[in-house]
Length: 261
Image (cartoon, rainbow, N blue to C red; front, side):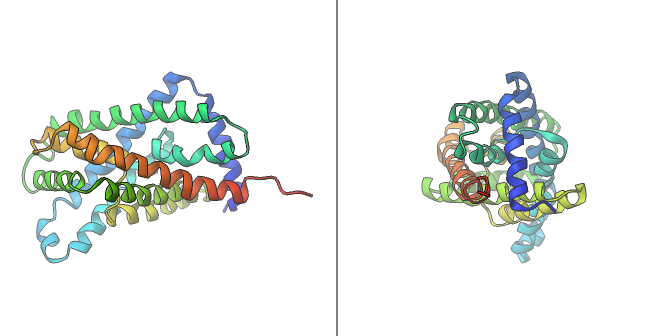
C-alpha cells in the first residue's frame, strides 16, 4: 500500500499530466466520466428503485442497495481512466499549495471537465436510458421522479452542505484508490466511501446531471431552472468545498512539502 506521502506524490504527477492535456483530450475523457457516473446511477435506479416493497418495510436496506450499486461509475473513472470534475476538485490542490501549478490551469481544467461531464451524463440520460424505455414503467419511473423531486426540494444551504459531504467522501475514495497497488484493492477502496455517501443521501453534482435530467425526460414536474438553481449550483459549490478544503488542502499541507534533511 502507498503511504499518504506517496499518494500525494502520485496526485501531483497526475495533476501535472491533467493540466497539460489538450482541450480535445480533456473533453473526451470528461464526456466518458460523465457517462460512467450515469451508468452507475442507472444501475442504482434499477436495483434500488426497483424494490418498492422492500423500501416500504426496510428503507435503510434499499438505501444501502442504491449506494452499493452506484460506485461502478467512479471505479470505471479511476481504473479505466477519465476526467471527473469532483475528483479533480482535490487533485490539483497540493500542487497549487506548493506553487507547482497555477490556479489558471486548475480553473481551465475544471471548466472543461464540468462541461464534458454534463454532456456525458445527459447523453446517457436521454439516449441510453430515456429512448430505450429502461425506466419508463413503474416502479422505476416512480423512483426516478421521487428522487429528482427530493433533490430539487431542499434549501440552498442544505444542498450545499450535502454537496460537501458527497465530495469529501468521493475524493477520499479516489485517494484510497491511489493508496492501493492492485486493481482489486482499488475497487474495494473506492467502493466503500462512495457507497456511504450515496446511502446517506448526499449530493454529487455530476450524478445529479444524470438523475434530474432523466426525470425531466421522463415527465417529472421539474424544469431545467429548478434543476440548475435548486440543485446543481449549490451541489457544485458544496462539492468544490468538500474536495478542496477537506481533502486537497489538509493532505497537500501535511504531506505535500519536502521534509528538511
